Length: 54
Figure 1: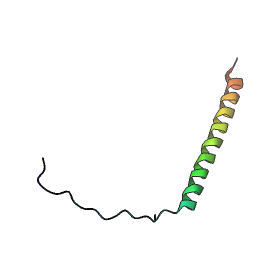
Figure 2: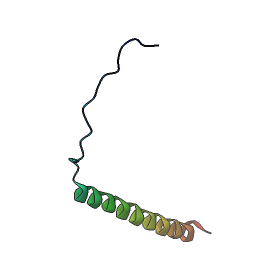
Figure 3: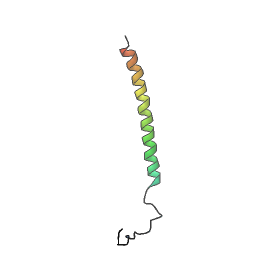
């Protein structure tokens, strides 16, 4: 077993430096982008089905 005492760390900071409003805005933008990308891919698949289908 270790003979040394564990290091003491500073107390956790209760306030966060994160900008939660900006975080939510970025997340919502990402989700919207993914949603529209899926719509575009679905439309492309349907279009390609009718173009390639003999």
